[in-house]
Amino acid sequence: MTATIPLAPPLDHAWIAAHIPHGGAMCVLDTVDAWDAARIRCTATSHCDPHNPLRAHGRLASVCGIEYAAQAMAVHGALLGAHEARPRVGYLASVRNVDAFVDRLDTFAQPLVVEAERVSGDARSVLYGFALRCGDRVLLSGRAAVMLDASAAGALRPGAAPAGDANPR
Image (cartoon, rainbow, N blue to C red):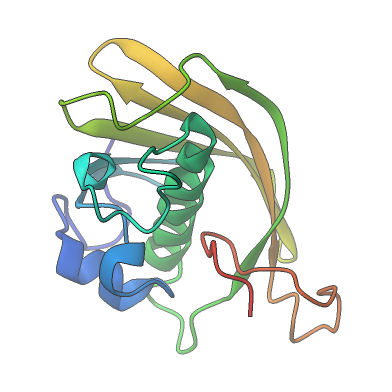
């Protein structure tokens, strides 16, 4: 993958946290390793952190990988919109065809590779395919629809969370 604008990988955790609406421990990605207009590949080690805010009962369920993917999509949007004066806000509208091939993410010692590919989209919504891997093993995959600037258009239903935001306002 090659960058379409002069933000060459790798981009670190500080860059990611500054460009998506996730701070502190809720920013789960470590680096952007590659990206282009259609795809992004990130790395994460936060699944190994016993203080990961997505853990419940001391475990990190595989479905939490959706949050990792949503953050990768948010980073991809930030990279694509880096030339815009105002960043666009995206809201996760739906996830479909999610296949979890493992029960937990926290049992893997190696970094997670988080990949997202923009399948289609326009000025109002984007469809991504995503996968989380550890080494050659796929842990989770699926598709996600993201509505862009939904709150500005009044289309966001009460209680919905921004894409990549596990804590609705």
